[in-house]
Length: 187
Image 1 (cartoon, rainbow, N blue to C red):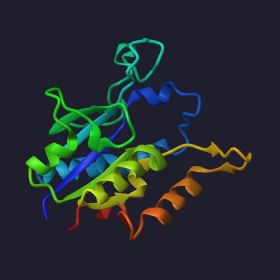
Image 2: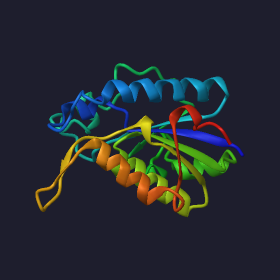
Image 3: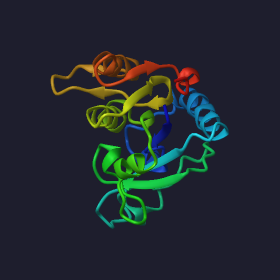
Image 4: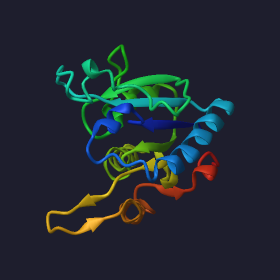
């Protein structure tokens, strides 16, 4: 099965958000970097997606004008292709010529994708659901995703571990195969 690694929203924009927390960041980097390196070494396409705002306000960290829409400084990545999106699903992201990531995957005969990046329960989970519904086999290495503590409308606090566990619960067997980053490239 021909695969591609999709690296979602691993960008400096998040460091500018009030919820940014360094606690789990080193563990995330220690998982996603070897995954990127292994994919590159095996000639598996590495597709980088950046979340951008339609706003051109430099105060918005997701605006291209902010200068924060760039790879997190601790990561090394030489992507096969780069896409920008303004919605949660990376399949809608566009390259510099206006082609969607979904189109790129189909054009290159990709059957399976590995989804990694930021945030576990938002763009990574949404991309996985969309990709599964579009017919792709999805591997979801949860340890190569990052999220942050959240509070529900009822006031309940959720830790990143609880959010990741919930994402695994709803994806496994329905939309994705939950794997460890070290095993994500196995067919």
